[in-house]
Length: 204
Image (cartoon, rainbow, N blue to C red; front, side):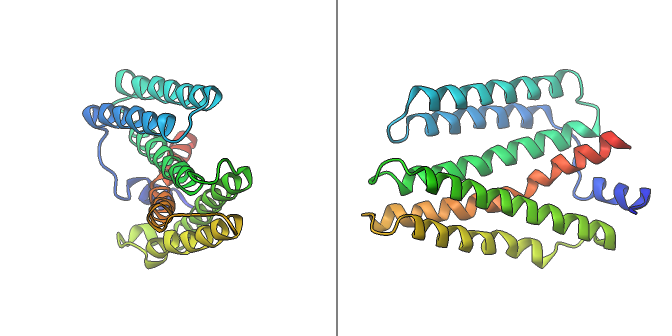
């Protein structure tokens, strides 16, 4: 079992106090990136509605953090975790839209890319539990495994995308940009571990 000291070290690892201005800027970033997703390619009404509803929910949460919970540690964890999870999903969806820009919708590819992102997050969560158990967060040193994880998951995602798009016509520039977005998706998903911190903090 993890002891209180190990959890405390984990919660304080790279901790910075909550910043209201940063939270507001992140909320604006979410809306800007949402507009990019909404109007890239051929937007549909359900697509725009889903993104709009998610943005409204996140805006309400961020507003509550600013007005009611700004003095609590959990505000930092939720702000970081939700923001970077959204950015990871944004890059994942951007990768998908770029890959199917010429060939039309491909739900198999969309599910494949999102599944690969979920797998990346789960792998990093398992790695976090392993480091928590072994006391790595008391050492204050970054792990090489953590750094290499997005690259590993990115390679798997790229391979899956190529298999899903066999025979499809793709421009080299768009395909390269799509794969870069995919790797960025996995890399930016790492800070979403702050949601795990929020859970631990709440259960203390």
